[in-house]
Length: 238
Image 1 (tube, rainbow, N blue to C red):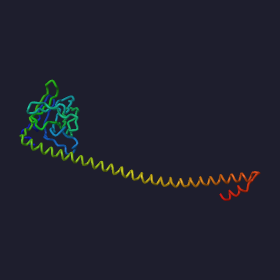
Image 2 (cartoon, rainbow, N blue to C red):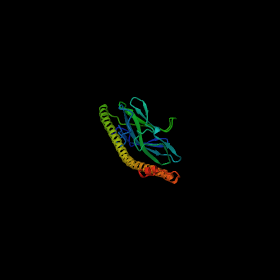
Image 3 (cartoon, one colour):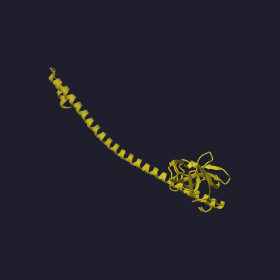
Image 4 (tube, rainbow, N blue to C red):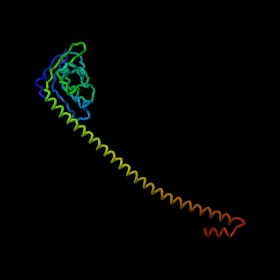
């Protein structure tokens, strides 16, 4: 973006604050974090990099992105994205500055594509004191149309890439689950085979127990006074 027609690189004072606009991205496309995107296809992100300097000699000053508001060509005022995931990083976070300290970060706004950003304002308090304003670069309508088309294409590609990565992750998870199932199926098959062998042993043991009981009954008969040869015969043929 051509920043020559905007007030960049010039520090303005707002009470003990010295505020400088460093750079601007309009639109700001989050290539590295494509999940962070405007609410819908009708909006864009605009990011402004600022430097805030504590010009006072003593005390601490608070600073946050909430001190920056944007005014469009129609006179409407827009708040920044605040704690939204749409912020360009490193964003200007809420903190305190000691005397002489400088804080630098990005302030991000979400605007409709048909909104022309005109000025950004910094204010220290709601009493009207400590207010400073900066003129922003103006883009012709045809340039905005080209940027909108290009940005939407990039956003669509980024979303398609995200969807592809999500599908690939699902496939990897399913493959891991399938391998886990195969391992457990093999283990279950091994357990079933061992269980069948155990059943055969149990059956043999039961048959042996039956023979032992029959033998015990024969012995009891032989030990009795009325032993019967038929019992002996049955035992020998058992």
